[in-house]
Image 1 (cartoon, rainbow, N blue to C red):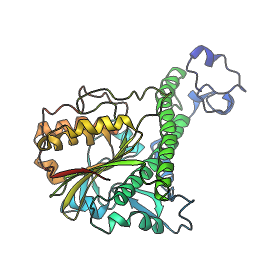
Image 2: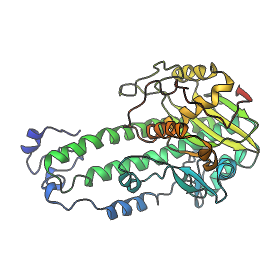
Image 3: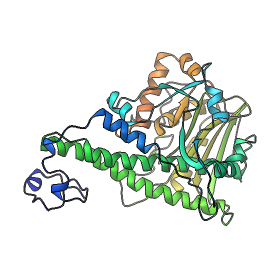
Length: 380
């Protein structure tokens, strides 16, 4: 546990535990940190190259054995989503998620053009298990079966675990290096800002593995009714695709649901996917049947008139997920006011430290067109 008291730090002996919480002795960590060479951009680039080389198969080893080669999997399907919203050069708009980009933009997240071969990819499954787990919706039209919804949920959770593991490693890297060459008072300032992110990432990672374990059990056919699913569909493709997980704190009426600052309780999770399959647009919400908070959230969505639902969902997608991609053509069709609203929400979804606007999901003062709800149903 770090201690950010300057008097305590000044009294530390060489063999005492370092104040930053690394677990190392002071002499092997922050002693004389102000004399060290500041962290360089090239060090960040090398770190990120290494971290994104990580290859793992998240298929449960209890039920799926003998992995083969790890592939660059898409959390949002290239064929069922990304290709449908891409422009003539096969690019979509999204966020390039890396430390270099974050530092370059000084924390100001913005949309950038990304080729569909590189959008929403992660090395989280081997070719064998990727095919085994996800062919039910990758190789067939999506019709909202429980099998398809469960597989979509599983892939979203795996992608989030992959991202969160990298986030934990990135926080450790920044904690070790970001304050090199700085005076003690600025070292403390840097560490105070990093620690909550690192702690939050580690706790979220533990919770995500708990979530994954329940899905592993479900995929083993031992427990078929652990999850609830809501499917929303239209007869036209979506201009937005997304695969993500969130802990909603407010519903679509701005009613408070749960306090994420309460570290004593485990928050309820909502998994959501938006994509296109065989010319139809789909949004799939998934949540544990024990998650009463999410039941309230979904009920508030269902009370919205279908003609207005897309606008509310736009608010939700961009304020809740960084793994969101949009059609450049649709983006260019929006007016300045609409684009500004999306950019404001996107900064919230991509940056946990950003100030959340009041009535975040309940604000429908600026509306959006491009997708009309034709049908919605719960999966039984």
